[in-house]
Length: 294
Ligand SMILES: Nc1ncnc2c1ncn2[C@@H]1O[C@H](COP(=O)(O)OP(=O)(O)OP(=O)(O)O)[C@@H](O)[C@H]1O
Image (cartoon, rainbow, N blue to C red):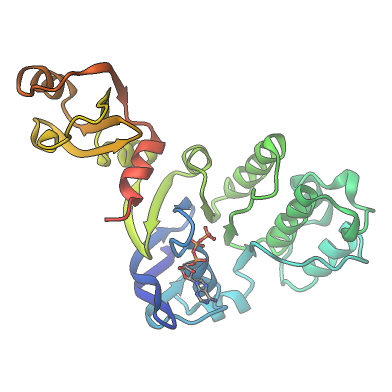
């Protein structure tokens, strides 16, 4: 069964088309990253998925139901970018309060332990650091034992160590066959913590697959050299080349066949090639290639 299904979903704000005909399905039990640059439409998609805003067109279903129904049944937990915590309540009181709203919540101590909050249980929410507050938001999101957990840039305020602990907690939660969808700008986070990466840009899906598939889609290798003001004309016609970029005097050719590209570069052009470097495209290269403005 699909946990999430978007069919031709769009959403405009005035004349800004934030989400532009999004089609995607997520099977139950998957952990999926929604990866995209600023303004790609990730938060808008998540807010529609939670029933907080309505699509301008298209249809969204969670476990075969409209989002509002799935949320009302306690099937969905969410950690949004700016959820205010009630500052006077302690961590324990807050988590226990939210647990009380759900029919079959997780055990209080288990939640505190999973979110690494046991030692902070007696602290008032108003006295927490940014990273600690994020952990409380995570605890509140999982309190009702939702089948679907939605996280919008959950590690934004966290340092490296907190991030690692956060993702370990998320994987713990997902391990019980639950579905997780998280939005991030961070390629490594998407790569390390999901089994599928959906890349969005300008409100559309531009790539969908495992991190390895996304790297391959963007052109498997990069050939770089110093161009220093020489013309890049014709480089895109060399064998294997799918894209050419010139930045700061350096040319980058994306190619599926680096041997043929390099041979043709030396034999078939009159360019003076300096500092030639060959690299397997990393996820960063792939991401930039896929989300670049046309
Ligand atoms: N309430 C709003 N009113 C007007 N425009 C909006 C509103 N919310 C979002 N937008 C616009 O819609 C587009 C998509 O924004 P959205 O916040 O969904 O992207 P995002 O991928 O979540 O970005 P970020 O990673 O920066 O959070 C952007 O162009 C944004 O400026």
